[in-house]
Each structure stands twice: as structure tokens, then as C-alpha cells.
Length: 434
Image (cartoon, rainbow, N blue to C red):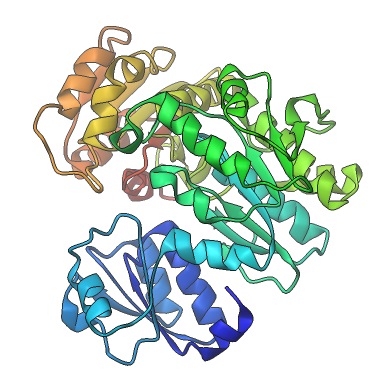
């Protein structure tokens, strides 16, 4: 978004301000000394943080939340068209932008490094950000988590560089104007919107087509799904195969998937002109982000507690392989909260096979997020399917009951990992003592 437009804005209203992406733009507005007002359905960690930083927060969506003197409204893609604040904004003739549209307006006037992909985009975005910040490139950053060093999901830079996590859901990323596009991978997900893998590939193909002949596409062109996607486009940009990069360091964060993320970040930073030794120096210190294999602490009995955002079978398998490799001599206990009824139903068989190499699995209720319960799938169904491959699985609905169970059963020989895109991390936070 052009600087003179920001200059003319005094007050911004955010609908769905508790979302990790929308809250990043709210943080941006606060750093630019704008008045920030927002609403969400329930109070959570992110919402409390915005409030602490000076934002005015409403719980629940009402037309009375929106003041007439608001200059601009930005809303989450999860917000429905009949939202009362959205309707009120149009009645007041206040300019309205979706979160992806707002990102696109920022991207327009910046040299944009967009990180896309079904898995790994948050970590890869954060890696590129840490590399460029360490090299004093002073980028603006929007990431779907919190950077460990900055303790923030938004960094306001003064240079031309904009590093942004590019989400494919509802083709949101097509609002961006990337100069460098990273595609970590392409996989089945968000099928409540896309329906088929081919439609996902078509969305990525549209994004690829937007890159000019002076731009770069960093991907694994030999991956079958990416190869098919590239063939759908009249690509002009230079293709960079990140899998050919040589990583001469050991990462703090475990897993082969993170090595691949680091290679993609290395390839992007090299295009910017950062020397390999500087890139590896930054990557060597990279300790991950919030809710990505995040170490939380220990229980009273000495069990290690981790948390991870994994909510897709591919992500679950990759994370559990990493934790098994890191803690091969410990009992691994997984608490998994399925995310979305549609995703749980579609990937039921794949999820069932994802937990076979851990010692114990606890399944809790499906986190509905944007969906209504159609009653055709339940967390018990998933627990039953997992039981075909791992006989030490149980369904426990109540978080407090899970906490009490873990406090009694997990000791210093145990590693507990909470997994899912909902609020399952609260279980880990409830049992850590130091």
C-alpha cells in the first residue's frame, strides 16, 4: 500500500483481529501510530497481545463495534459476507479490504519474497526473515507465527524488501506481486474449498504466471506435483531448484523437512546477494517459531513438553519422525487435536497411519474453526481408525482430564507433544512447571 495512503489513515478496524495474519497487520498499524480497533469471537493469546499493545478489542461481532470515523476496514478471509460489521462498513462507505487484499497492496510497492506451499511455508518465511535481518537488509515481514528473536509476527522494515507467507486458501496468494516466489511443496489440503488436487495446482499455476521474466521461482521442479503445475503455465521467470543447494551446517530444529526448508531459504537469500557463510551463520542460530516444534518446558516429573502446529497427515508424519529421531530412547506421547471436520473426514485413513511409530496417542475433540459440525465425523472415529495401527490410543474430550492423565503417567523418560492447529497447545502450557 502506498505510503501516502497510510499517511491519510488515522483509524483502522479489523474484523477477525485474533487471526495470526490479521493480527500482524494490526501490529503494523500500531507501529505506524494508527488507532487500531478490532473484533473477534473469543479472546485468546493473540487477542490479549494486541490489547496489551494498545488495540481496542470487542468480543463478538456487532454493527455497533464499528465507528463512523473509521478510515479503513480489514477483515479475515474466515469472515462471512453477512458479518454485521462488514455490512455496516459498506453502509458507512468505509473502504473495505480483505486481509489478502491488504497484503497485496503492501506487496505492490515492495520487492516481494512470497513463500508458498502446503507445508513448511511458515518456517521457511521465518528463516528468510532471520537471514535478511541478520544481514541488515531491514525487511518488512509478515509471518503466520511468531519469530523467536523478535517475539513478533510482524517486522516493520525501512528497506524495499517484503517477506510474506503466501497462503493458498481461497487463492489468497493471488493478491501478491512476488519478485521471488518460493514453493516449498504442493499437496492435498483445503479441500473444503479446492475439492481436488488439480484445482490446487491450477491456483499455484496462476501465481507462477504472475512472476515476471526478471523474477525467480524457487521450487523442486522434479517433484511430480510441482512439475505438473509448471507445465500448466507459460512461465517466464527463472526456475531455481532449491534441492541442489548444499547445507554445510546442522540445524537446531530437527527433521529432514526443515533441512529442505533451510535449502529453500538459502536459495532465496543468495538471489538477494547475501553470502553463503552469512546465510549459514543465521540458519545455524535459527531456533524455530511459535508452535513449530516449539519446546515449552518440563512437567513436575521431568517429562519434556513440545508443541507443533501440524494438522495435515504429511506434517504429522514429518514432525513425529523428527521427534522420534531426536528422542529415540524416550517414550513419546502425542496429544492430537484434529482441525476441521472436512479435513478429518477426507484424510481419515491417512491420519490413521500417521501415528504408528509413537508410544501413545491421545485424541481430543475436532477443532471446528470456520466449520459447522455436520455430525458425520467425530474424534472417536479417528481414534478407532488409529487403533488399527497403534493399539495404545484413546479419546479424551476434556483438556483438564488430559492434563491430569499426563501429570500422573508421564515422567522424565517421556516426551509429550501437543499437535494441531487449534488450541491444543493449552494442554502443554497447563502441565509445564519449569
